Amino acid sequence: MAETGEFEAIERRLWAILAPYRDRLEEGSVYGLVTLKRPGAKAHGFFAGVRVASKHVAFHLMPIYADPTLLEGLSPALRARLKGRTTFDFVSADEGVFSELEALVARSFEAYMTGSAA
Image (cartoon, rainbow, N blue to C red; front, side):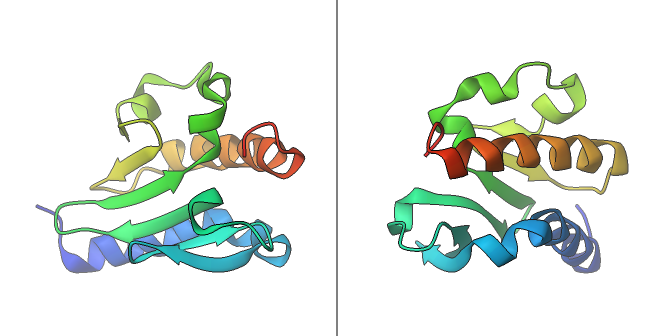
């Protein structure tokens, strides 16, 4: 099992992926999950959030629920971390996977803001 410090580093890295979007989103929360959402969006209409759990760090990306085509072309390494329909679980840092996640987040943000994946 990963050390607490490793989970904290993963959490920081995942929030860094969301940093470029903070100026266009506002913080919210749903069920204790800190999220980023469009201004005025309801709690469940959030864009993304990060949560540290006991055995992993979860990255929730809601636009992929509304538009699963955003997942097309995902590498096996990133797809293996997808748990359920919207959550990627991380137990270790992998810059290759984080870089691919950054690209997915960018595509998802455009879809989210235009309403095609809201």
